[in-house]
Figure 1: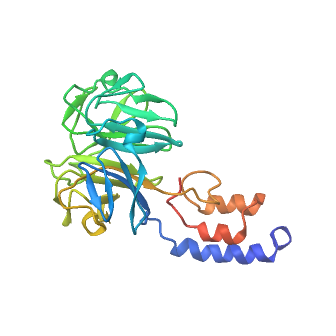
Figure 2: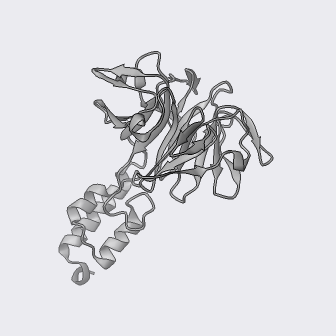
Figure 3: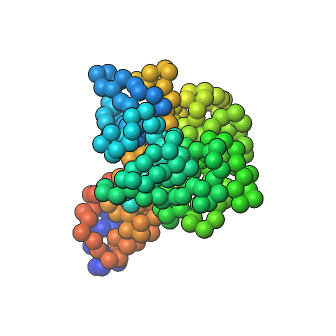
Length: 294
């Protein structure tokens, strides 16, 4: 073994064995993207409800201008996410982009040049009165979204605090708000799912989640039935009258995630030790134990 890997790698493997025991496997705070339901002024900057704001734990900045995208003034971005580098979003009223009409039941995909429908809401049976107000894309390409009112789709009843999954063929319940003690009167209006299936979300009204008091400008983290405050909107500077609508997160890819499963763990260590890669030992050690990779 020593002849094959060398003394330095043997020491490194012992070091990683210790890390395996102490590494945390929970999503820690990272940068977030969000959109408010009304124009807001934070510090000296003003953002519209058609903008996407970037927050990096210390300040807000404009990440995406709705005006530059051609979204009309007064239109609210209700959902926002990235899908393999393309932008995914929904709006609260029908709009025309490049001559094509998109309704509040559609998920719109923008590839940097053209707009298209990633999800055609009317085609999958979303009723006229409903609006897609939260959405994200999983690593397998499935769409996870929420509607602003209770609906029945494909014989399944969904509530406004549920998450619905769509794999291109069928709809199913991805997350039950009732089963996770989210109050019936709330509407889940922003969502992002980590590679480890931890969920970040926002709600449209203040409420209590198993004793955790949250506001409509907060971002909450759900992990295996447990809630915690991920982003305190009021403390960060979001005005009291504003509601956080669209939610997404910025989790970087990890050097050393060789099997591309969202973490750097023992299976990646086996690849590193057996095959040899261009990544440095120090860099692999720094990323070992991460579970927040794209």
